[in-house]
Length: 121
Image 1 (spheres, rainbow, N blue to C red):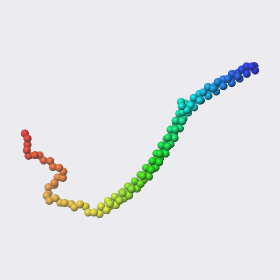
Image 2: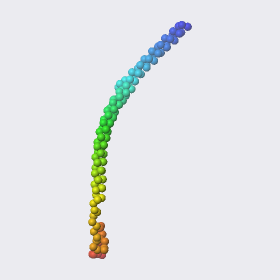
Image 3: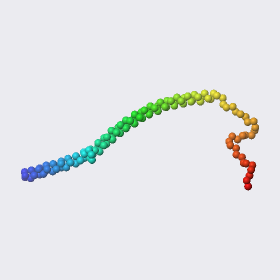
Image 4: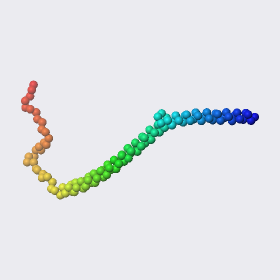
């Protein structure tokens, strides 16, 4: 009985060692930097760093553009206030002088089309 238990224990240990060897090979292929997941993780890490740099640049640019837009908005508000003052001062001026026509016939303001006196048959 002890012999059978020892054989089963040795076969279990050999099976566990075989399993560990296979698992080690798979894990080394999995972590390989050129073809495995290690390479994919390294590439993704580099891409994340590039995206962080691009995001920082975009935020800096957006902040600068926001400041420029605020300055331009303030200038536009100042110009609109000046225009409002000019328009208000224009209301005090007299309107254009109205001219009375010397004849009772209204003169057309647009182009005049007339037929020629010569007819072709």
